[in-house]
Image 1 (cartoon, helix red, strand yellow):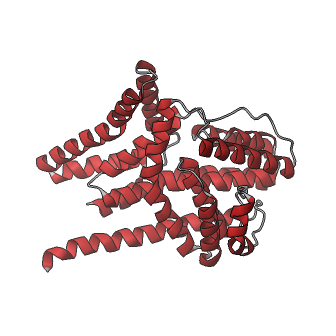
Image 2: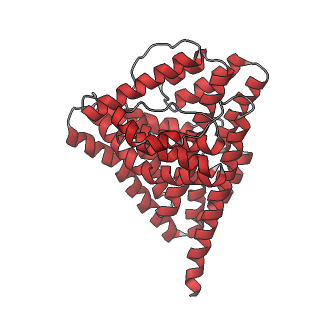
Image 3: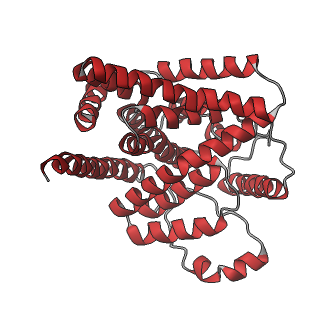
Length: 358
């Protein structure tokens, strides 16, 4: 049932691609409403609220799923297809990425900025990145669009597929998506860092300073997270830990494995704290190695850590700067990754089916 429902969902999304994420907006409004009603600085209340929104809703969906299966499997199948259609996203993000590529190719920079700004706003990306998009050139827009595609494909396709296999029915998808939206809506960690200059050096410098400053504050315990944001961030980190490694492995297999492995290993030594941005940086590091494109900024580390990781730093692969022509590498990587995931899912499904004959 899971395999056939996933195939039908992909066909529906391919021919009936949703224009906007209405379900996501509705879910965001519900999460914000709950936060406003229960906004007290108490860790127990915050933990209980998070548990009800994430775990409680998933358990309720599990009960509904079992009831539908008991009534009739076809009813459960139709429900699963509809649920997957509302929560998975592949063609929609591919279309946005292709629109940006088309605008850049036709030298329509303002239209490309408008498209990528709407995209980055919907996923609440870093303010420095948003400013770079608004004032950057075609090369910077191509880089940020590629980064958004990698992260969007993971959060809206590969990670949900992973949880679809691991947990019964749609329960795993809701568990992951709910934790993602709670973290996204409750996060209060964005800081106003001002607008960087137009050139690449200033943008890279601003990003590097912000990442270093954030890491130092978190490691020293001086970061001023509110209670809700801290719980949501930690919760999503653990729900995303395994899927992020799964997606990274898929990228490495279908891309340049040697460079992807080297980048992932190097990034693993630089990650010093447990937050969703750590998984994002790992995904981008492996993705840039798989595509042989430079997408991330190396994190500043201490002198002692540099000496300990000298071999890893020396083995950092030479990567190309993204441009308009290199955007097609990202599209190819996503399609190959989807095909590999479907092959793995098919083998797992057939293995589960064959166990009834032995």
